[in-house]
Every structure is written in C-alpha cells, then in structure tokens.
Length: 64
Image (tube, rainbow, N blue to C red; front, side):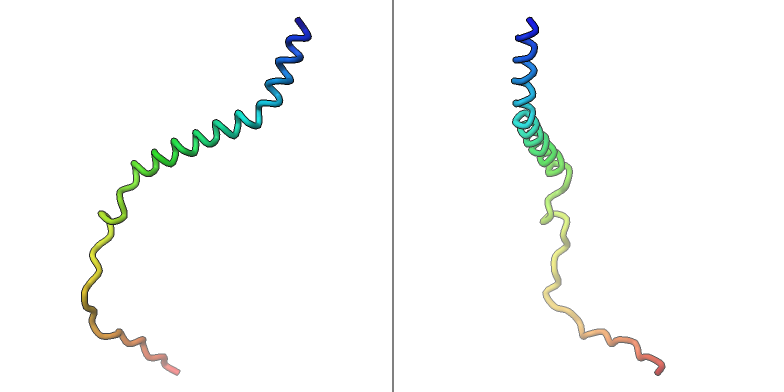
C-alpha cells in the first residue's frame, strides 16, 4: 500500500506543471471571454471624426 502511495505521489508531482499550465490557459480563455463581453465594441463608443476643422489655436504669449 505504501508503494502505491509513493507511486501515486510521484505521478501527481510530475504532472503538476502540465496540470497547472492547462488550467491557467483555460482560466485565461474564460477571463478573456468575460472581459470581451463586458467591454462594448470600440466602434460603437467612439464619436465620428469631424470632416473639417477650424483654424489653429494660438498659444498664449509669455510675459518675458
């Protein structure tokens, strides 16, 4: 029985990096989907650019 526990512990210990990498990639995917659904589309939020602009604004004159 103790041999089975040792073998099981070694197997689990050697699989920890791959399991961690798998679950982290799944977590990143889910978070990306969640944030994408929460944030509105940029095209809907951005105002239209003006077709023409006015003259340049002068900078203030310095007293010296």
